[in-house]
Length: 95
Image (cartoon, rainbow, N blue to C red):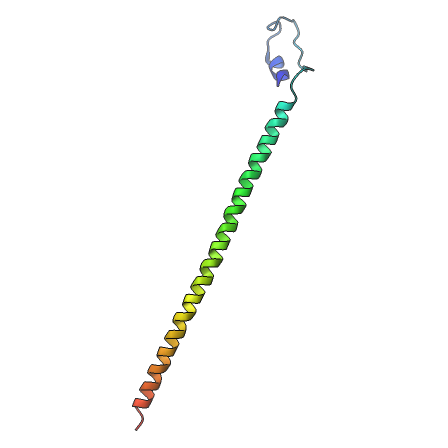
């Protein structure tokens, strides 16, 4: 960004009457390094978000599977108890 400093400098400030706006000796790797760093940071954030989303989905599915098993067991026991009581009531009301 030496060209920016040269463009902002007042004439004669650096010892010359007209400052060179386009410095041929400027370091061109600095903007590329910043861009690379920004891209890497963006990919890391995206990867983190994807990992969090995948983790949530896995935990949600695992919780559903566990709840389904427990619910099925409880409903089966409830059905057996209800059937037993119904038979008991019906047999008790027979003459």
